[in-house]
Image (tube, rainbow, N blue to C red; front, side):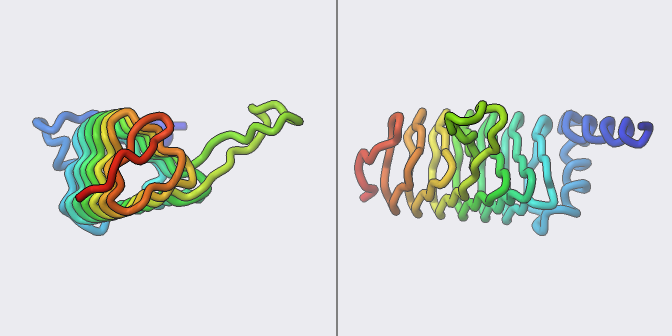
Length: 188
């Protein structure tokens, strides 16, 4: 019980300590043992869960209030030169989420690789989640308030317009938008 209280207190301090009183320094020291590169910026109020199943590349930057979570065997692999704006939420459960290099993500984006089964023979709350991998290529821009759903592959150079719900895979250099996301045009 006492150990759990101490651990919870440490996580709270690590997550919430403001940058101007040494929060960035403390987070850099702590996360260095989990991440192979030291060139990362993790401000206050960023939550990691399942750190052993999360890997980040060089030049990893996120804004405050982001959540990066891995559960029950799900892995998250993030490439080099990654940036995510405020309130980014990514969660991998049972399966993997792979993000390439040079990916930029707007505020309030959700990337989640699992969903509930909806068989009529059982109550929804009694059904196990279904998971599918998500792959995001290199040089991708995901606009604000977009949602990336299970089983999607986003090709290199793709652009997701703000507010899009991505339910199907997107080819290289495609610009998509809407709910569900549809092809608008190709990048020239």
